[in-house]
Image 1: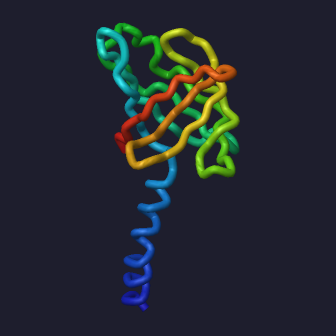
Image 2: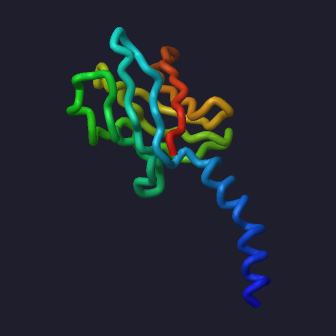
Length: 127
C-alpha cells in the first residue's frame, strides 16, 4: 500500500509544479525604469474570484510608501489563456488603466491601456 502511494505521489509531482508554473500567483520583479533604474517586487495572489497584485518591496527608489499598495485588482482568466478585466495602477503616476496579463517564456507580460495607448512590461518570476 505504501509503495503504491509513493508511486502515485511521484507521478503527480510534475503536474503540481506545472500548475504552479502556469499560474501568475507568486512574487514578480518589475522592469527597472527611470534614471535610477527603480523596480518593484509585486506579489500576485487571489483576492476573491480574481487575482490582485500588491507591492512587496521597492528597489532603487525613495518611494518606500509604495510597499503594501495594491497595483492590480480584478484580474480574471480570459478566453485567450491570460487574465484581464482588471485594473492596473501605474505606481509612478497613480493613474489607473484597463489591465491584462499573460504568461510567456520571458515571464509575466503585464499591460495597462487607456483607449489605444498602452504601457507593457515583462516581469521576472522570483518564486
